[in-house]
Length: 225
View 1: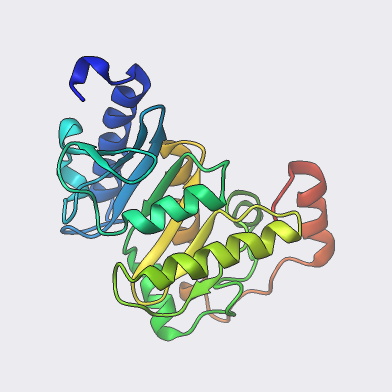
View 2: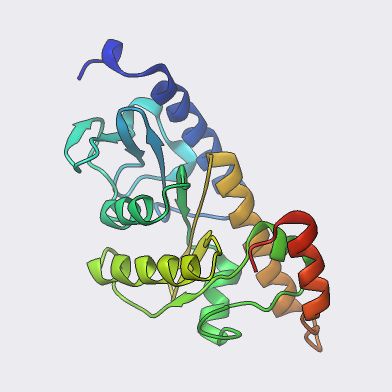
């Protein structure tokens, strides 16, 4: 596929992925070649190349992948491509996925998370509203296909309860988040990382919001909790 046959939305997403990647890198959410970003496009799927630094991404280097997984253009896709494709299949509303090795969240998995189903308690309204439940995915090597199975199970388990999952935490690796645009997915990631920093940094640790307080957020803002 040559550049003239690529949908204009795909080209705009190339620039947006690079912008978000650079922003996350400059603010310390990713380092070295850790992390990856993908986005749905009318042509299929854009994803960052394998071992790419998110701080120095080049738009035309991003891998363009067909819906069936075939490589169309750009450099070789991230080794997490299979996981991204499974998330998009299980969560049709997702338009962008971001995975990082964010320090506070990785440290949380080393110390011990709040629970397997919720790595953090609902301690702030914006965490409840913007992030929601975040289950822990037990450790697997990077790129292990069993991770995709577990993430799909988590998405489906919440869907049965009428809830939308927006993030999972890969033990010892980092968060994987998704939303309807690169900017929105980045906002989920940032809220999640900052909530982890609050939870780890406050002593004694704060109580969770009450059921009544969470119910108010659900009724007023549609919070997914």
